[in-house]
Length: 97
Image (cartoon, rainbow, N blue to C red; front, side):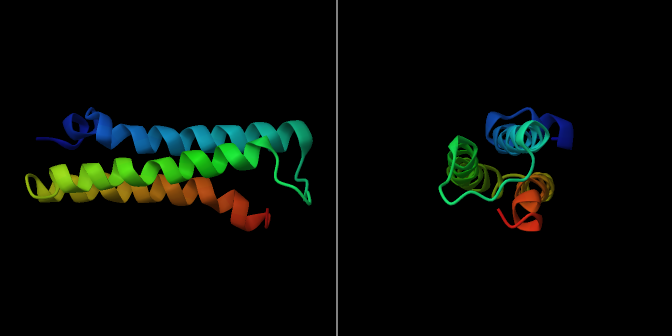
């Protein structure tokens, strides 16, 4: 199975899509309101937390299902998922939000 065929599996692309959604939301919030340090968490922070935490069971399902079957392609997809999650978290750590 090729990498592109593996990425068509829902357990592979959903976590990447969730990270992209987080990035899009963060850029929208930054463009609309700027970088604001609030005492209370807003809606964007809660959506960030739900999407990032929601990726964990999807990634675990992918790892359990595909690592024993196709190790190399599964590791490539897991690396992509990890990079996407780190890219989504980077603005939060950089701006200390």
